[in-house]
Image 1 (cartoon, helix red, strand yellow):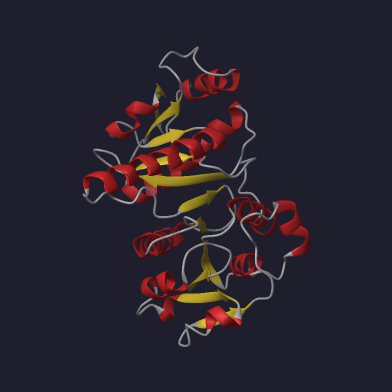
Image 2 (tube, rainbow, N blue to C red; image 1 turned 135 degrees about the vertical axis):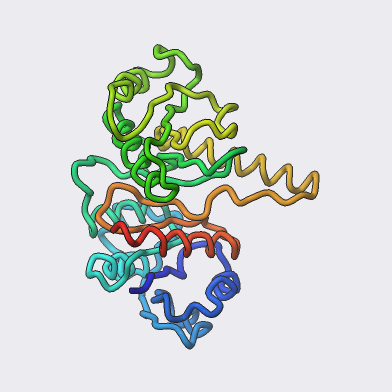
Length: 282
């Protein structure tokens, strides 16, 4: 089966897609305008009409852009014509269209965006990094269970270690929903080990497998980390690993991966490998 790849609606240059897609024509269905698709003559493709722009509101995309590369790519996943959909486009629109077309994965009530970041010891899954700005304790708990499932499969972990991002280690720290989530996670279970709250400066030590947070805080955390990494790279001229090779839209009935809006070749290649690896569990 093939992977549906959205070529539209981001700042990722066509030449970057070309570099990442070298010798991979048999694995992909490309979606985009005629002007873009002419650069990929050997690939299976679908010409699409409208483009989901970064500034488009999700509700407007749902109403008026069902003929976009993003919407049609998700249709391919729904119809089992593709094992995964990858896009560098509008995060809110991808989440809304994924929810609408693929439906939620029971028993989860909200979608979450899961990204993998490097730490001193091992890759860390952080959820949510921007799919939902509104949350409650139940949502945070569901995020933890979703992320634990992926970590178990990707890294053969028996009981992934989970922590809540917070402003202190005590159970009484944070907003009321964080405190309630702490209590939910503290109940004994067979799927993961809850290690409590963790502060931002300790995340990269590599002591946990899953970091759970709300989408607002998670997005700021991830982008701040990216900014610091870019600053260090520019000032001290050494290579750093990419912070995230595509984030997974968790909680829907299908594999959807959201890449950075201005992805590099290595980012796309990492997302391609992630899609191929994870497609076995969908």
